[in-house]
Length: 301
Image 1 (spheres, rainbow, N blue to C red):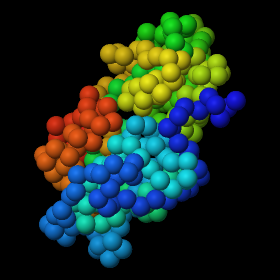
Image 2 (cartoon, rainbow, N blue to C red; image 1 turned 180 degrees about the vertical axis):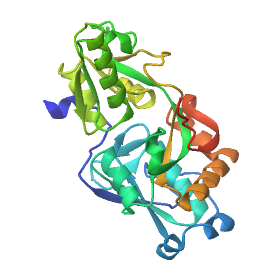
Image 3 (cartoon, one colour; image 1 turned 180 degrees about the horizontal axis):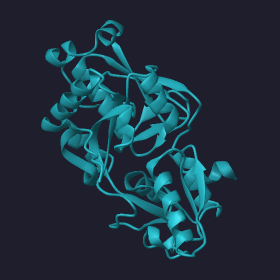
Image 4 (tube, rainbow, N blue to C red; image 1 turned 90 degrees about the horizontal axis):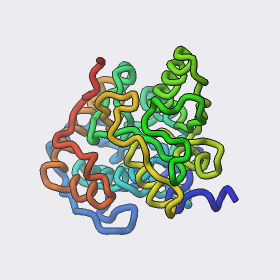
């Protein structure tokens, strides 16, 4: 039953799997825009990267339509996979994807040097900038996926007191919904039953099986899940801040990594030549596009 409830196309999230990208065909098998190596960008890569001829990118494998891990435990499709392929061609290296178990492991692995970066997109927040730098390439919004008909009448985060809300463990939505639970208690209302899961498919499964009233997460992947649900789910709380200010997401590197500015300039070149828009259009994420790549765009309020 659990297998039947998992949505088609969301893939698996094995403890660790690998796959390489960087050629002229995307991971999904669709020809990508061929990128000619930019020698100036290649020359700016760290020496160890040029020697190895590759970059190792960590991912969670379950953040569609950005990251979709294949059932073979090795392949990766989605926006991030195709953007990585374009970046690999531009930089003249292969980008090898390693699926790790959760966002905390991704961030600590980058900080420790086990991975060169994470293409993400990962939420950029000032507290995360202490140990990492972000090359932001999307803007995101945080909403709720609920059962069709919105039986709990959730219109914003203010309506979640006393409800069961699933979130990604270690993510920004988890922190915000726990803060809202504290607010509920201060106002004399029931606390929120926060259910933290390691990946997106398990979180959405909690809603489909009735264990959770809603899944609180980024709008782009939730839009994907709703489309894949065959009418069983819908989005609510759209157009509301839901506890967030401007939310930027992007690739992550270690703090002050020499890779940071190279990635930023490479992403900007893909924006300027139209490759970025073609990829975003293909996966239905046009509304999340940025005109310019940025570094650490999140600013403490």
